[in-house]
Image (cartoon, rainbow over all chains, first blue to last red; front, top):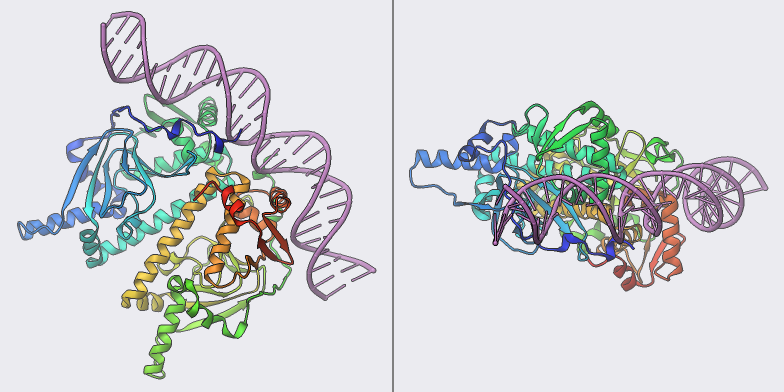
Length: 267
Length: 267
DNA sequence: CGGATAGTTGAGTTATCTCAAATGCAGTGG
DNA sequence: CCACTGCATTTGAGATAACTCAACTATCCG
């Protein structure tokens, strides 16, 4: 019988907290890291915070920004699908997912949110983007008031440019996802997911010796690639057997990046 | 053997022109139609043209806009993937596709462009959006200089709002496509494609009695839904047999819209 | 009418799914 | 420290949606 008629475990609200250590987490200096990393130019909200700080330094006591910071355990809902909100949020620490769920329990993960990512760039305009945001690991995120953030962004041309860039990049990623789901085989999809995550993490300085923190469950990978957890397991086993990657203790190491890239038939 | 190793006919550049009559085409009044139709508020460039005309009326001989209009036969490449261009274009008449092609010949159609659509909203910022634009029917399109168009849009708050809306809508559509490709069966994907096109055409006043011009070949549908033309044929036959739709002479009639919608498991 | 492209149908193949049982692994409470 | 519980992963076996190939038919246009 087809998947659409058999809601699986994914429908069940996850209750159990599974705290997740983050190898590269230095907690206290979470923000300063972004200022240095290559992803900075895409990291809109960190730039805003910096700018705001500069403002405060010049005119003490006059910060135009109210930003609240929250930390939420692993495997929790951060933002409901129909939760209207006048907040715009970005991840400071940890991994999260942005998902669309069908009424019968099938789900498609549209993106994995990494430190520095906005939940959705469009949320700067829309109050209801229609995605379900869930934490994978423990997540710290910062929320701005939409009105304040967009005012600041539109007043600063360089911020506005950064914003536009982020928007284009987000759209490009979604389009690539559509191509992957529509026209690539299971092994290509998974290989691309891994390479894509590695690249994004590398920009954040979170890859060392081809190795990075990999908190995803097979179900996450399945929901991101349009596959089944069982098939993800088989494919990853195959990858391991061919010496492409190793995974242990939530760390993924890419052993043969060239071969892995070759799997994806270029770009 | 898998599709990725067997480039199909899709790789072959289409040479033969197949002019396509458009039932609702009234040629001379192509533009004025948009002013009246419900899609107007999303129809950014038509709004710009109108505004520009108003400008010319007030100060004769001072139009800030240079817009060129072209007509291209059916089945031609309108914009190459890596064609850098300082033009931003919109469809005035006819149907086109926006496609991403993999090096081995597989292709994913990201969207069907209908009258009033920009080739890509992002093209207002980017000179190289990375999509291949091809005509399905004979297509008339208008091109603006990017610099001029974006200047006008950013100077007029209402145009800017319209632009933002169009951008969000385009992104929403791409996300829905990803969900469809990742998590829906063949019949659902095709049913959603048909309903989606009908809805968009209806906004343009191009649907009468549940019937609309349907110039798509099975290969177009296949490349849009991540399927094979053969499987598209079987699925459409099934739809016909169940009395959901009829297709004849490039006209599609939806016979049982409720049943067709039910196929898609809501949303 | 002829040539080309498009659509249909049958038969066999395959990638991926489903179901189910077995194993591993991490946190909980005695 | 150990057994227990609840999840996550692996593996096998069989089912199925969708694909491939190929032949046939229909349609279109000159």
